[in-house]
Length: 292
Ligand SMILES: NC(=O)c1ccc[n+]([C@@H]2O[C@H](COP(=O)([O-])OP(=O)(O)OC[C@H]3O[C@@H](n4cnc5c(N)ncnc54)[C@H](OP(=O)(O)O)[C@@H]3O)[C@@H](O)[C@H]2O)c1
Image (cartoon, rainbow, N blue to C red; front, side, top):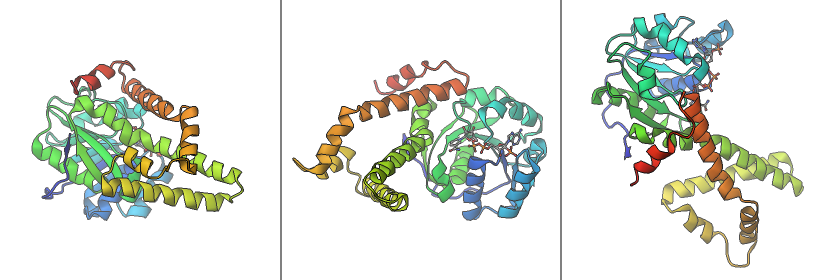
């Protein structure tokens, strides 16, 4: 895998975001904050209330017609739920510009599966962002389909860099990488919640427990990111012999928390493949084979 933030900003063209819900709006908002001209951005959704809110919050064109949105778009980001995806792709296929890039953030769908619903030769880039996009701190992984040129991939990198960090990887690794980006926030939020409940059980108010736990996560993850130290090194540094932290870690292991996290990551991986229409257990060999 290669770290790939764009150094030179490609020419920005018209952007259509189809399905501007949680993720679509987060990416739209980040691109606008990064200076994407408002007049070049169109978003779609189904309900009039959602469309009115999008137009009001961002001052952009918000419409219900996907074909209308893609007609002049250079980049078409599709962020509907997997169940709506085939219908939306079939709907836009006849209206796409020949040089448009379709950016798919839909979990589990390969670039080949997306391209099979589009005119031959359509460039497709698969991206898995995460909810950190809401605060410009996504960790996004992306893979280019076979019809995508370097220049087209650079345009998608420019788009996604507005929402945070971007890592380009071979598509054979995408499913695994996407679980860390897209799936891990749910685990981390659940872990934070459990930490807060533990503190509340000791008598702290929920507000105080939440403040302490959240800021501790911010500090710990900043330390990991800034020092580049392995988590094991930092864990050993904060668990002195016979101390309180090591006693807590022993309890962690007695309950099998670490194997549970590994199992959870693997189950998330399988479910993502199912949502993309592939057999759940068909990906493990792909992942292993890249490390042989
Ligand atoms: N949320 C995340 O953290 C996250 C992370 C990574 C990837 N993703 C991917 O992002 C996609 C969207 O997830 P989400 O959480 O953002 O879902 P969401 O909040 O439900 O947003 C989906 C949006 O799609 C719109 N929509 C549905 N059918 C449509 C159609 N035919 N044409 C145009 N718009 C349509 C909905 O409009 P209305 O609101 O008007 O019904 C809604 O605003 C999923 O495929 C998911 O795999 C999400």
